Amino acid sequence: MAVRMFRTKVGSFQHHVRGCVAFSTERPKLVTVGIDFGCKNSRVAIIDSLVPHVVDSEIGRFTPSYVTFTQQNSYLPYKWSLQHLDPVGNCVAVGELAKRRMWRQPSDVVYNIKSLIGKQFQDPSVQEMRRRVHFSIIEGPGGEAWVGICGMEFSPVCIATAIFQKLKHIVLMDQFHDELQAVISVPAFFDELQKEHIKSAAHRAGFKLLQLIDEPIAAALSSITTEDGIVVVFGMGAGSYSVTILRVSPDRKIEIRTQFADTSVGGDQFDDKLVDFIGRQILEGHSVDIRGDIYAMKMVAEAVEQAKVELSSKPAVTVSVPSFSTSVPGPVDLNIKISRPLFEKLVKDLLGQIKVKCQSILEDAKVSTEDIKEIVLFGGMTRVPKIQGIICEVFGQNLNTKVNPEEAVVVGSAIQAALILEDEQEISDDMIPLSIGFESSKGIFTKVIPRHSTLPIKRTVKIPTWLDYGERKCIRIFSDGGSIS
Ligand SMILES: Nc1ncnc2c1ncn2[C@@H]1O[C@H](COP(=O)(O)OP(=O)(O)OP(=O)(O)O)[C@@H](O)[C@H]1O
Ligand SMILES: [Mg+2]
Image 1 (cartoon, rainbow, N blue to C red):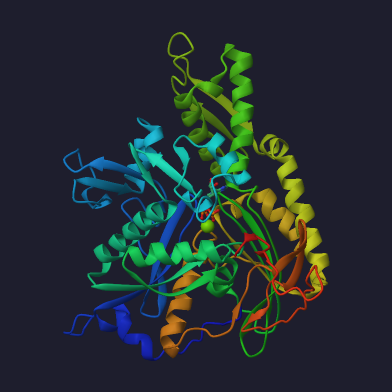
Image 2 (image 1 turned 135 degrees about the vertical axis):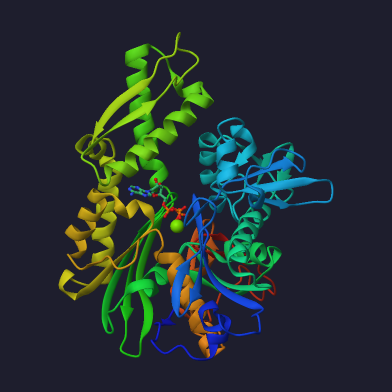
């Protein structure tokens, strides 16, 4: 995808933004936002007086991407966390309220829905996820992965719709506008089907969708100052990591040179390593195996994630869980000290994989570290000092720290929304994220259009029929990510 960078002059979209209308008697009808839909946290930003502004939810500058359902008359601690869902009185709770419910009814709360969007139930990544999460993942009517919670069945689009609705409520609480239009970020590895599902969820939630933007491009838009040269964007959130090498050209276009993404390594896998370690310590110290105890595992998982976050700024932390398991006689508290070197040792294989991939993408892109003008980080996991160390070791020292990495994507998405409105036209240069080809012989994928080709594009291939004068042939078309027809 090639996009223009943010210009300092922002003209015709001024009437859409809050700061510019603050003294007007006419209330604006439309607000424009950027949305970062995350596995663990989602964020929304508006452009306010030409500056992107992340909107607060009830707990801070993010909303946990957790969803649950409740009866309309049940206790409503945060009344604006609850949204009416259907005429029979079910309400959907999204965010912190849903996350808190996990302490009492873990199987009634769904999270990580972004990882299920557009996936088939039999997909190995879905089967792997089934082993890790507390809610049930079921087979939908067309073989897709759905979720079953609170005695009901939902498609991932339905859950994503609830999260987008929640973000809409957050903006409307802040802005008192009538309509919202949005640029929504998606991971660079999302295929067309996954993008369609995000579009559908956004429309169902009541957003006018201006554009989907790749997360690394949005992160780059949030902060780069380079006007001509190579920029590396490294992102790691809860569910995946990606490395993207971009070229910024003097006409202020950003183009992807090369890209790598891995959905099997994210913050969750780092947490799993710590949970395993704590589990082994408990087994040794108390002869109790907590792996089958859903509540103990939940408490330990929350405590180790907190410990991992604190270890980014402290040399050592203590993982504390009071009365961690009912299997242990008496109220036994867990207190295990973890130093940063121990943490780094426990996740050594993950760090090693990341380093190898960073080195190979640099080789693939045929750029040297001297060519790299800037390195942009996005996602909470890029705060881990060892990860930053690997990035600097491989790509050089030009880390751009202007924007908080957790907010780079949402800020960039809001900037892109502003740019689209400025020109009142959608960015025309688009790019396909995955190669398209066909199955030439059993199981062999023959590439026709390489990934990152700029659209529109036309390619012609000649395919012989098996028999002389044959009139028909069945062709199975695939993208890198799976079958598309
Ligand atoms: N200061 C920190 N140090 C280490 N890890 C952190 C820190 N802050 C957040 N994280 C971790 O970052 C991850 C969440 O980051 P983020 O909110 O960017 O993810 P997400 O957008 O929900 O996920 P994804 O981008 O994969 O969809 C979690 O694993 C969290 O524990
Ligand atoms: Mg993210």
